[in-house]
Length: 194
Picture 1 (tube, rainbow, N blue to C red):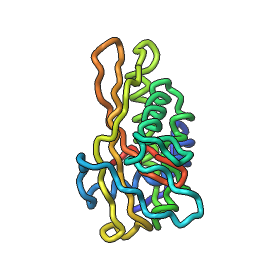
Picture 2: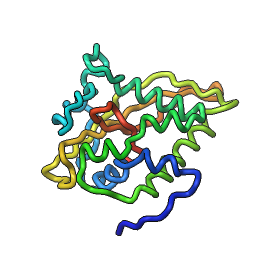
Picture 3: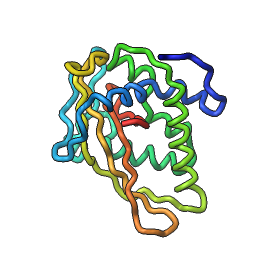
């Protein structure tokens, strides 16, 4: 059941930034598991006239797109989260425009907004300030394909791509943070729920 309630003041800006993440959570129960062998295939052409973003398969090579690679987006997103710069981090989170490009449903985003805020706050506390969090590297770690044949709310097939970002904080050995992204005509977008 979808309910509408006003978001808490600390997540009001998140309400405009997280339309697709909840859909990805629903699809997680239905979609295939993550594959680690091959990078995702290029998504089907979006219905808008905007050019598609570079696929993860071309992200490590020279990209012909004007969008950054998925690895660059992942590092930028986690750097902004670690710097406690929520506004900059939200620029890489899926929004309503992204959702309308790939799905037909409108959903209540309050829970996802709160989850995104929690994720950003956690990274800020864990890596920011005196912890001197350093983003070392990022690489594609796997994909999960969501098909319009199985997920009837989708307008086109979508790949959820897991990106492992290596981080170092407090001078300790590097550890991995796994982030999940999907591709839109505007480029790669973070989703807090794979």
